[in-house]
Image 1 (tube, one colour):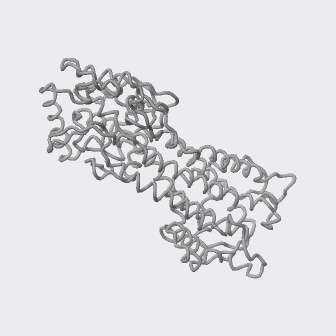
Image 2 (tube, rainbow, N blue to C red):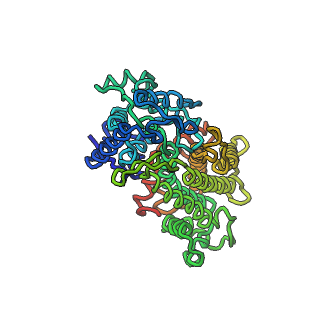
Length: 513
């Protein structure tokens, strides 16, 4: 058995989420902390006391949303929760990936362990069993407006817990009750507040945000690496990266990017091979890399701060304060903070894609680069990387409409009771599209700049960049004649996604900022 992640409602990290989201069943085990169990049981006992008193308390013995004034008889409370789950399973579209769904389940379980939700411990334990036995509920992507929580997608997970939903096990869809019995468990029997606690929160949008941030932290470093490689390929000047310049405009992201670029270019033979070439200033896409990449890093820093709080927040409603003998209705389920952070991060990632495409164009253009047109030794007969650049342009253009902020929209629902919503899941889904486009754009830039540097042989770049080129060449040979380039792009994208390119570079020069 690999790593054990003990959830307690207070200490979950983005790395934990990424590990669980991508884990095989033998890699990571999720378990409840003993202290969390005590809090869960105390909170649950408090709910039962409310039921015995019979006084109306929202979410426990009343209707929901605009039906909150309807008092529900004690004998109907279990059916009330089942009806809630069934009626809220209205998601549409393709299902979330296994990775995202597992992240959602972990975040929901973590929130419920805090002891403020009043949910049965059996529901939380079965949610954890799903993670540990690799049972993945089928959760449609669309249907949440990001207030009152991510009701529709979370309801599809809750439906699986009560044995009425669909799940995927070993790549095959099956009924959830069958999967539950296969692991020696029983479906959850919902009691007072159970259904509402399972679906009333920000777990879906938080999962999308956390996974995007974890991946983005690596991509911002790779963007610096790509820029350094391209500067070398077109024999640009590194004078604009001088730390004295950036110390006069000390934005943290800008400083970090400038430090990275200088480390990456240390001991470059190419850099020192053209001191009298006449290039005084490079185009902005090369000269202003620290300023642009740095600003993009700031969007990531802000988003990480917001999501870091949300991961261990209590986001359902109403909340139970056992020690204070209170049940208070509030709005922690509202996803405005996450939605805005994800919209902001999408803009930052799109700009990394935007400037990457401009650098690719510089390598295509022999007037600027002094390299063969489209980086092919025999242009005319060969088109070279002409259309790889077109693909980068297409992805960059697509990001522009994907970056229209979802969080500025709001469609009132529930007879205007829920009259302002965050559209957080929409923001998260768009963010992942932009993230995927950026990954592909960087793969194209690496395809081009490794070719450009090889065309400068026998000159050599820095040790770090040469190590990267050598690793790329294991699966992507230097281009002599036209071939099917999407395969090369896919191979480099795989090296990005499995963290190989970053690891190769950091083994040479240490961890980048």
